[in-house]
Each structure stands twice: as structure tokens, then as C-alpha cells.
Image (cartoon, rainbow, N blue to C red; front, side, top):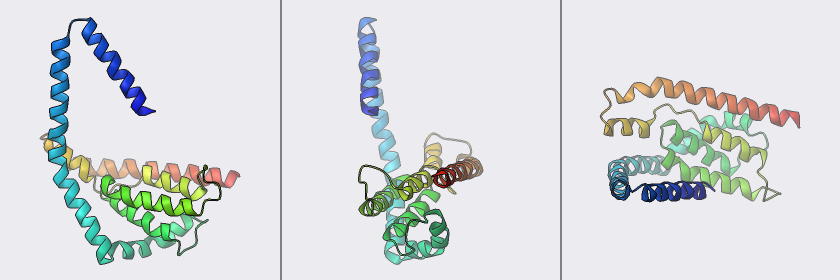
Length: 191
């Protein structure tokens, strides 16, 4: 759906530029946009590769499993419909760890695996379970302690103090997580 909306915006803008005689500007912006995308990718790729590798090392070394055991008591309360040994809890914990480090791209595979595990137990395959909804809320509003990707972007664009957003990031993501989880809890209790 979003692809269609953006496609419509691009078509409308292109037609407008052609009708108003700004074909030179249109061509220039298309080239600038493409070059900007390639530049951003080349600058972000090393960071993504580094942190994805670190997460893989943490997973292979058992560090993520230890983190999962550490947060299982909390996860058991957040996901009361799951048994304490449910395989999705490990993936959920890994997703939380990656998101806490601001590594959304590294968190994605763990989130997909968690949803896949949760979907296996889902009796209604076309409807999300309570655990799926809770995980989605936790993943979307997840607490970010170190917003690594945002700091890297700020560094790329020569920010005077790229890490000054850490405290506001922690506050904003903590508030959004608490608000989302409280809303989820109230909705579950209302049933």
C-alpha cells in the first residue's frame, strides 16, 4: 500500500515538473537522489556489517542466550500465554538486545524468527495472537539505550555532538514502550 502511495506521489511530481517545463530540474534531482542513496548506503554498510557481525558473535558465544535467561522472568510476565521454555522467548530477548543497541537491522532477523515461532502456535493463522501483538508493541516502541544507527547518521552529516541524543532517545523509547505495554495490558484485561 505504501509503495502505491509513493508511486502516485512520484508520478504526480514528475508530471507536474514536465508540464511546468522543469525537465532539467527533474533529471538533476533524479540523479542527485540516486547518488545520495548510494552514498548513504556506502557509509552505513560498514556499520551494519560490524554490528550484525557482533550480534552473530554474541549469538554463537551464548551471550544472547544468557541475556535471554536474565530477562525471562520479565518476559514471562509480559507474555503470560507463553510457557517459560517457549522458543520464541529467546528470539524476543535477542530482538530486545539488538534494539536496545539501536541495531534495528540486526534485530530484524530475531523479530522474524520470534513471529515465526509464535505463528506456529497460532490457532487462527489470519489473526495475531496476544503474544504477537505484545511483541509487536515491544519491538516497535523498544527501549533504545544506544541509538547506534542515528549516531552514525549524525556523524556522517557532521553533527557537532552526534551522541547528544542518547538521553532523549532513552526517555522517548522508554515512555513509548511503557505506554504501549500499558495499553496492551488494559486491552487484554478488558476481554
